[in-house]
Length: 194
View 1 (cartoon, one colour):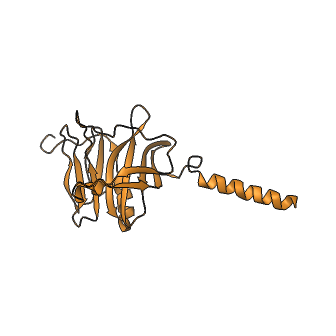
View 2 (tube, rainbow, N blue to C red):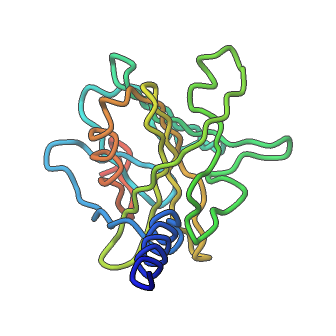
View 3 (cartoon, rainbow, N blue to C red):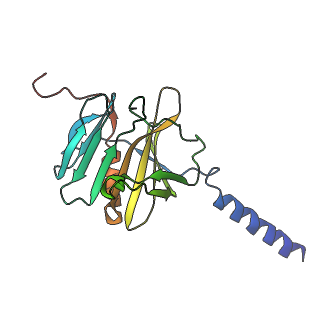
């Protein structure tokens, strides 16, 4: 009888631990450049690389911090603009809880393809990106057929702020992750400024 009670308690403890992502962090993916894709500016102090099949403005360098890149078949899109009545921001206003919650809710990047209808989606999956041993970014996403994702980048205040939203066909998950892992500190000189 004692053995059965101990086994049930042990099973309950294992179940409790496995249900709480705040205590167990997922493995970290290392950032790395892609040998073929061309770097372009992403935020003030970062670059990102996309396959040649992507079109759009990317980082336009304006104070609106507008960013828009999508694959030519529209199966994947990366988007950012974050403005209040007073100003536009390069990152989201509110930092992500550094304990990396199990679920976050964000406005879908598809908002601009729904006639302005605000769609909120729960993002329940988490992938961390690291530089050496330090966590530099958190990528939250869902596993719906029309998936959404949000990337949070670590800033100087050691907080993670929303940097870009994604909307994509879930079959393109690996491509989205391959693009995100190309993010590097630095900037690219505009053409003709060599």
